[in-house]
Length: 378
Ligand SMILES: Nc1ncnc2c1ncn2[C@@H]1O[C@H](COP(=O)(O)OP(=O)(O)O)[C@@H](O)[C@H]1O
Ligand SMILES: O=P([O-])([O-])O[C@@H]1[C@@H](O)[C@H](O)[C@@H](O)[C@H](O)[C@@H]1O
Image (cartoon, rainbow, N blue to C red; front, side, top):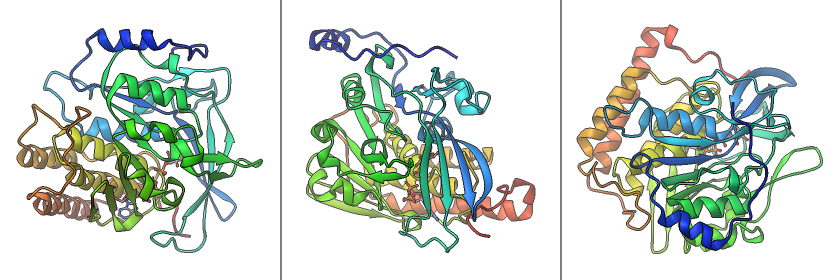
């Protein structure tokens, strides 16, 4: 694993401009994912019921690898992950970190304890309490590669994406998508996750330069959707109810897909990556949110970072190839996003739903394709 760079966020404005003007190449539509991998310990009724690789970067990489469009000759989807872990990192050989290794730090790997409630989770009630028990170093602007990217995903889980790091992402990437959890999380003396109002953070002034801000329904009140939607497109995810998009002058609700939830961890992360992949395929934002809902539903159906059946991925690819016509000029260009539903939105939903149905039939016929246990119920 490469060693982490020393903190250095003191790039001059002129240097940044030069960086932007110099086209240093890199494959077309390359993405930049910023946020650390972590250790997740899943606890129910005082008992550890799972220990898994976590961190939004892990879930996001998994979905981007599975669903973003790529040229025949590209072995992996074109994106870079900037993530930090300690020497205790337990998942270096798991697919996501093995493909895109994290930077190694002297501090320990970020670690969360997720305490699941005994009561059945409702659509909107928080179904888990998160406590950060260890925190790795923040990701500094100097940790980001010195080149331009088509898109960036700011997906911190423990405050590791500093305001100056987000600002540098905005300079390097033509369009930046942000998970609100990277901006508004605070931690009490015990490490319990709480939220602060986005307006009171140094991130607020960057919102007009962000393309999409995703928040869960629990986070939405801290984001201040009515104010934020005047600055960028806000997506509020609503668990099993799907999601809604709000922008200046419009909004849309996007229907969910059925899922048997066994572990809610990573649903929001997988949603955001599915959404980004949809934009890369050239879908409008409201249509891309269908792909977000699809991968959010797939994430809750398995414990930890999910494994997708190759047949399912092939079916999704065929649907997208059939429904998208503008592969060569996708929407991620920083300026011209189409936000509204297209006239093939319902067809796309039906086709993806059919894939869900076929996969669940196959899973019932062959329980070996199962999900490895349910941590949501006793
Ligand atoms: N039980 C579920 N059934 C179907 N889809 C779900 C379920 N839970 C989550 N999803 C999908 O994942 C997305 C993100 O989930 P949500 O719970 O809102 O986010 P977070 O994980 O950040 O709390 C939802 O918008 C939805 O598309
Ligand atoms: O479930 P979700 O909100 O999409 O995202 C989760 C984070 O909230 C959590 O802090 C982290 O430990 C998980 O691995 C996962 O990244």
